[in-house]
Length: 359
Image (cartoon, rainbow, N blue to C red; front, side, top):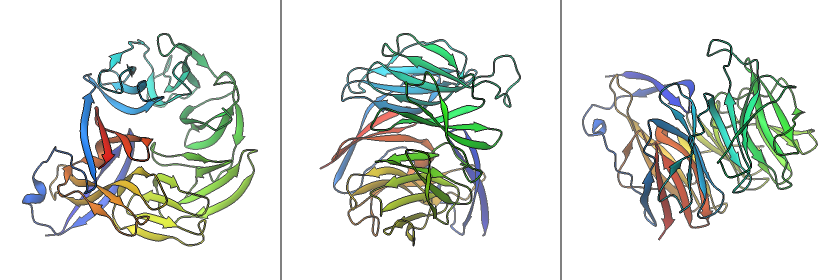
C-alpha cells in the first residue's frame, strides 16, 4: 500500500516533506525512546531541564558554565536556564520578559545576547516593526532590552568571528540581510544585502569559517562572502532547503538538505550524495570523522513518527556505522550540538542533555 506522509516541523519553522513508503505497519511503528550510539561511542544522559517549555538551543562557554534558551509553552515567552556544573543541574534565571525567543549567543561567561520577536503594540504573528535584542553583561542575572532603531525585523543565528565581531541574519517579510556589530550588539550596520540571500528553516542561515561567511541562498545555493562583505563565490549545492552546513575546510563541505546529505571535495564544483535520506548534522572533528542523526524509516500512519538513529563515519561520510536501535522522532527533537573536544560532544534532544564520547 502506497502512503504519503506530509510532515516535518523543525524549530518553529514550517516545512513539508513528502515521504513515500511501502512498508507495512509493525515493528517500524513501535515507539522507542531510548537513544543508543554506534560502535565506538558511548552516550549517557546528563540532565533534563524540568520546565513547561521547549529548549531551542544551548551553549557551553566552558566545561562548567552553560546556557539554554527556551520558549515557555504559555505564550511562548523567552526563558533562560544556566548551569555552573557542566549541565548536571540547571537554574531558571527567571528573566520575566514577554518576548518570543529566536536565537542566543554568549561571548563569554558574562556577555550574552538573545534575539527575539517583539510583538509589543501589535497583533501577532506578523508584527516585525521593531528589531529587539536582550543583552546581559553579568552572566544572565540582569538583561537589558535594546531596540536597534536603524533596523526592522527579527535577528537569527548571531555568531562571533575570531576578532569578536558579531553577525546575524535579519529577516523582514521573507527578505534576508546579513548585519554586523563591532561592539557586542550595541550598534549594527548592514554587512551583506543581495536578493539571492534566503533561508527556509531556522536551523541554518550562515556559518563563519576563518575569514569567510557561507550564507544560505535561494534555490539551494550558498553565497561565499569575505569579511568586507564582498561576494567571492556562489556554490550551487542542488539541494533545498538547506538544514545544516559543516565546513571541514575550504575544499570540503557537507550540506544536509531535506531529502539527502551531499559533500564536495573541490569547493562546490561537484557534489556527491553521502546519505540518501534526511538527516541532521552533529558535527565533524576531522575531515574523516563525524557524527549525524540519520533517518531510517517512517511509520506509515496519519500520526508523524520517524525512526532515526545516530551514525558515525571515519571516511568523510562515504560509509556510516549506525546505532543498532532507532529512536522515534530523534531528528525532530534534536536541538543542537557542541563539541567539547575531539572525542566528546554535548547533545540536546528535547529538554534532555546528553554527553557522547568516543570509547
